[in-house]
Image 1 (spheres, helix red, strand yellow):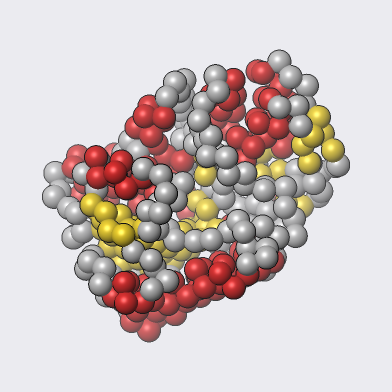
Image 2: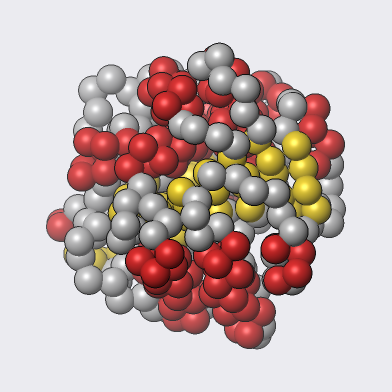
Length: 348
């Protein structure tokens, strides 16, 4: 465990949250100072897109580098596009499933790929495969001369015994279910183009990023607050504060390679669902209701090897628990997108 964990919060509004999540670290500023050319972020409209784009912009500015940060999405709902523009980030509307539109995207020597589909896979498997493997084929060809950092998922790993501390990057992948297999397909396609076209690439296997509005801890807190039963079958999880995940991902641009480098972006703790819910209960004055029992295995990752290259998490689970509990008790905004962390059969 990191003995230098930092305090965050308390948080009172969304602007404060997003400012904190996008605050650049000294190491990210150094990465942006070394980086040559503009950056394009594909799929910027998702949960992490706004804050990682802002961190890239803020760290480039702090480094004294004039760089275009270009966010690409359909921007079909919400105000993400205007908010990005407010912070000096250019936006381009694009359906990434349309090859003609992809071919017209701006040139950029640095590509951050965030496009994905997870929830809704069950019942609409073809769309999930099209987004998670078809789009990478279009992007891999279009940006074959660029450096590419790709968001993947820890779901490509199998369930592993709790006592082992989680899968490492060199472990064999054994995805469970259609979604996880399509994510592995995304990795394989980007790695294919890395090898064929020589595009230096890094694959980010992310395990449960958090902000005040979503994440597995937010799910647990809402179950406790609303006195709903908590399924313990996936009894242990990884959690990471979104600012840490943003910073580690951007630092991966320093370590792209051919063939693709792989990084587990995870917290440095294995969190017990039962213990986390009991802590939420203590803070909230509620008694958690549990169903089922903890299995001896879970979907877990070990990030020690990655920490040596792209930094280690700075925020502990207990700190996130306190801030999330406070946020929910004051009726803070929620994305209302449950993580389904309890799922063990890969059906999302």
